[in-house]
Length: 122
Length: 113
Image (tube, rainbow over the protein chains, first blue to last red):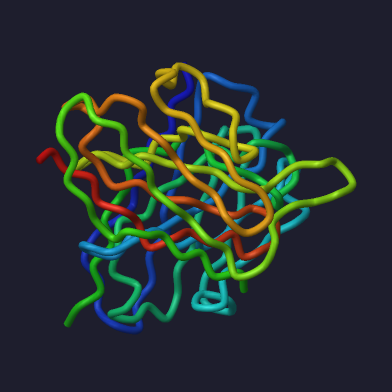
């Protein structure tokens, strides 16, 4: 069974940093790209970032580009999201998701983790 | 960016009834070289992460009940539930993966009447 378990969320002040982790199991991690998708409280879904299977290609949404960095450690079956210069509007549940291919583009997402809440507030 | 618009925003349907949710993209998500529409549907129940229902616009995901079906091409797509069950109460999202950034519709909230 595929499992994705996020961790690292919490309360952080504006301008602060957090690093999210997503531990994957139940599939050949090195074969699939991985994405982060967020959902602000009571709102819809916003794709944040994706990283290819080998980690050589990364993509970001415009709202986080230059502030967030996605990476992966294929030896640990884990993908990370380093979030810097956090703003109130970054407050959301952050989900990691398994992409449908090894490329970081042209993918649907299946499955999704349970998510981790990031709250940016003073 | 491709803008995905769903309608209605919400609807209430009686148990056993048929329901349809619509999704429109601001530009075509059909790729002629492989004859595929880059469109997925997800179901999100309260307090849960989204779950994949449909990909390639009409292919059901693993384990998805056959009362869920989807169709459409180009810019106009529909998700149909043939006979609404109580467990189908959820918010439904469409997503295009034709270009990056992948974008989602705003969601359609489905309730029982």
